[in-house]
Image (cartoon, rainbow, N blue to C red):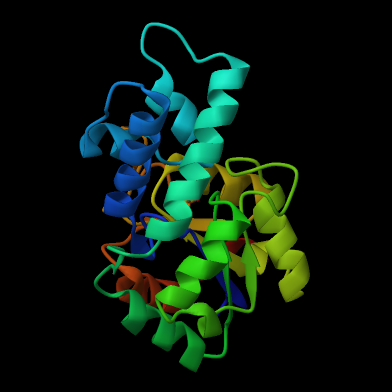
Length: 226
Ligand SMILES: O=C(O)COP(=O)(O)O
């Protein structure tokens, strides 16, 4: 196979975490005395990390002040640390896909905008940590996706050239980060995309699940290097 490694987005690609995120937001908003948000609203707010999620929850006519935002982030962290993983579900095809990638000898990583304090606990609680050779969280590098730095950091740790890494995610944050890093990008249609669904024109392949992604990657031919 052309690829030597594959990196995965976490929320919305490997795991359906929306119920826990929405519950963390609900408890945070209640604690700081702000109006509630529906799960559908929280769904559209996920993608650029915890601070942006909290800020979007608090923003109505005006954004929160720096002090309000700080207090809300601290509240979210406290509540979500308890809830994280409680209702999370592994999407269909994920375990089958991970097993197929693993059996073919590829290195595997997670590149997520979720803070590290939540990523590792979540993967542990879901029994998935051992699949991955590297985990890059939203606070591992200075920049988050859609900046290429987190994916490039994963490639460096894996010892793989970016053009031999395939990144798979659910949003334009993933696709833009992957392409800016020089990787190929496949997208799944089922996750969280900030209200901007990805289509096949945005990415190198739109795949219904991670097992289909594996099958698609087997057929990939790098025409540039022929
Ligand atoms: O924390 C987020 O906003 C999204 O995390 P993700 O990069 O795993 O989708």
